[in-house]
Image 1 (cartoon, helix red, strand yellow):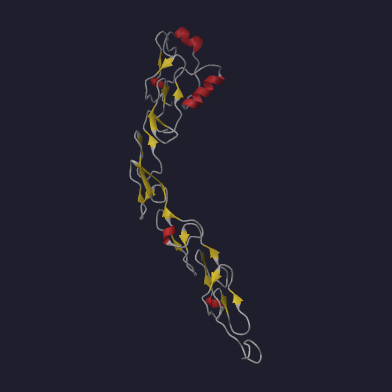
Image 2: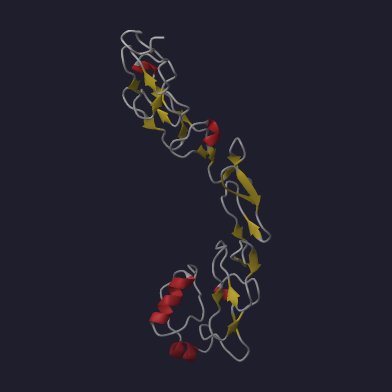
Length: 239
């Protein structure tokens, strides 16, 4: 027999492979970057953007932006409300709930729970709370957070300000004591045999007490130390 693909035998034509197109003649043409075509394609118009990209392949395919998904071709679709996706996403399932939302439909996270994102929902641990739409739980007033995420009662002779769930317990001022679960510096009381000179004998007050500008506990404490003293009491409306 006469060998194929020789002038004597005539042309030996095979189907144009995928990701290329064959307008006719001797060779095939590669589709543009990030696009493809089915076998047997004849024109550059048969090349379409790959999944995760969008646009007209002849003009160039662009990577799908975050917050959208691109199944391929020219279109890109916005993720549903309260959800997001990474760049290059290809399908609706790639859209996951934002933090503070849960489930397949990304509804708001209920109070008493936290939703870190991705649709998951968890119940707050004991002695912790959250409002609706929370991505984390805060320890109740008088409690602080352990490294494992659970909350424990503020230890004696310390105070733990409300609303600061992972706040480090603050040591009471010198010569004072406080019960477990104390919230503010006012819960620290003078030990037996000691007097709060802020409210005691005027001569002692004038000798030992110095007033510094108001502010948070840490701010006032730093100001006292800068003046060479120790914070003994806070007594104003701005503490």
